[in-house]
Image (cartoon, rainbow, N blue to C red; front, side, top):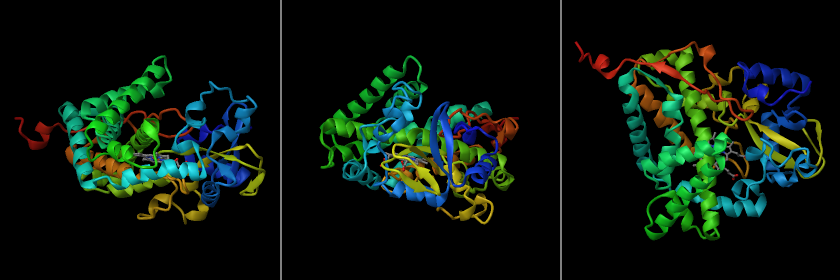
Length: 403
Ligand code: HEM
């Protein structure tokens, strides 16, 4: 029976699932995205690199997907939000992609990292201040879900109140409930207002940088560039923070240091990028002609999923445990090739500051449930803790100020 893609993310032991799939099918495996909708899961490190670097063979443009063209995948498919064509940097190949991509890279290059670190630290401090006296919190709902959006909003020049509004709109948009359309409208309205504001009053932020980039044609392309950066950075950074906190709380190699207030934050962050990257399975590339990958015959129009988590477990790139190689950053969590993530510098800065602030502000933080019971948010693409309930000594108990 064909494995469903969700079985690679929702399992307690992804490494075992990848090992079994590799033994059965090799480094490129046929899986189901939905009942009756098959795709290739590219699991080999070298094969993922070959996939993302050969634009002439594998397009990012979902309009090349045969199952979409022949109606097997309907226009209202739940796969749509992640897989269908987007009229922005994500949807194009070659020169058209390059023209939309250069403004993003230039904007990210111009970020003042010291200023950004200070403002992310302030966001984290304020959030922790809200729950520090309670002695308990859910580090996903009360923290990891909020920090990235406020930090990214700040990069675009939106204040904390607008950042919270953006978060509410984004949650509605991704919730796929009745208010999804309204969430989408509000999301674009908030970013549109920020764009108008910066046209009148330029500032040192990403909105201004995009507005002034000569390659973006008109307001619509500026707005869509803002939309894609905010949405691409949101879930991914939540997942990175949540998985890193989880690892530091449950793994004895880190847990002792957490309790002792000593940090191993960068090691934990890197280990997560190997083992549980924020995009475990990244959609997708579409074959432009019949070809071959990892010994499998690929047909024109087939969809190929980037198995970024599977590639992190490829036995050909590790002697053994991928977590036991500190400093090795040759994982594919950011992908590679022309579409590789442009947001890695701000993402690391947000995630590192978020994790460090928890450790500094909440010494003695401990999980409030057994590690095996940490729930996961259901998704075929990511593997993110849905909650991280923790307890910690309250400030009066830390200072000993309370008789
Ligand atoms: C932990 C955090 C993040 C991870 C793991 C991550 C990972 C990725 C991956 C795997 C891709 C797809 C590459 C491909 O299709 O080959 C991507 C694309 C992208 N990411 Fe990130 N990302 C993160 C955070 C961010 C942030 C903070 C931003 C923006 C501020 C961002 C902006 C983008 C954009 C705009 C693209 C599309 C690029 C293109 O198609 O050329 N990402 N990211």
